[in-house]
Image (cartoon, rainbow, N blue to C red; front, side, top):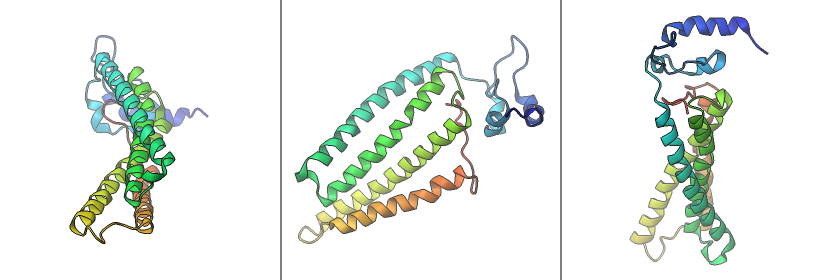
Length: 202
């Protein structure tokens, strides 16, 4: 439902930062109203909007990155899942990393769509989805890399008995997801911080 009172409040609150008439430099946040405008930290509203060419360049660049990452990580997931000889304990961590990297780039179409539309086209919901997927995959990938490093260290320093068991690796994977969950969900529910758009609002 359209809330005129709420929008008037936001419009008045952010008025000093919004673009003026024709001929003036377009500022970040110009054209946003209501909940979308409230998502943006006031700090960014004092900066000029990036040129359309920058958005186009980012969209084209991310199309390439997304295609390469989704195909590459998709092949890793497919091969590791279908080849029995590769399903070792250590390789479960590699598979976990590929899944998280796949999730990281699966959110990129939101970024590309926003860039093609020069800003906050997917709105608050798109921002929340993008940030949640990024938090899980980013934190999870970092922790998974730490676990892979521990596995390699253990195998090299103790070649006879240093290999991780399947149960231990599965426990490590479970701990990664458990550890990532509060850091991803607390900003989503605005319990600790909040998710906001990036400087290009994409």
